[in-house]
Amino acid sequence: MRVAQAEFAAGAARGDQVPTTAAFEHAPEIAFAGRSNVGKSSLLNMMLARKGLARTSNTPGCTRQINFFDIRLAKPAARGGEAAAAEASVDLPERLVFVDLPGYGYAKVSKTEALAWKQLLEGYLHQRPTLRAVVILVDVRRGLEAEEEDLIEFLAERPSIRVIVAATKVDKLARSAQKPALAKISSGTKRSSERLDVAATSAETGAGREALWMRIIDACRVD
Image 1 (tube, one colour):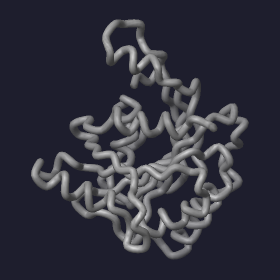
Image 2: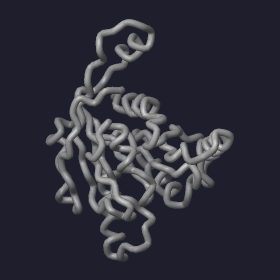
Image 3: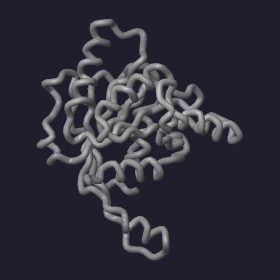
Image 4: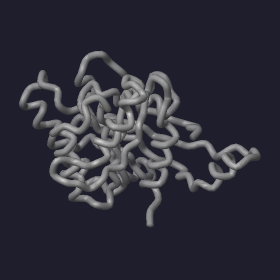
């Protein structure tokens, strides 16, 4: 997947700062959520093929607002071969928006700030009409934890939103350990045995980029 344009469009620390859907011509939005330091900014940069568009930091909790990125995809190049034909057959949206949500599970933020984040996030996730999918990042070495399970349960209240799990840092596991770890995440939560849609990713190696993009493009389709 080739990204023709990707730029930071807006940041919102409060609900009244969230840009209207009209500002993006009602383009489909894909939100990225995960605990602090799971590698969300690194994954966004990998997906967009940009080195520093989403700011990365060694300090957990660096993202303290909802960040909106305006994305334009390049049309598939005219070339031969089965792979090119398959790529050309994909119906790409002209425009979409990546939404970087504040990280959760970081103990050093104040209770007041944590509550403000919760209200901001829940308001966006519950009310945003153009939200098509939420990509939940999970460190493959840790698997699903209480915060991820809470988020999956919360999103179940909007069944039209697709939930995609990006298992990050897969390169940190031995090959023999990757399949069992991914299968465990896919098997569902403690509260539900419904299988989860999981893509194995690595921002370091670029693994899983195309697989995750295909899930995102599919989620952008409106029936």
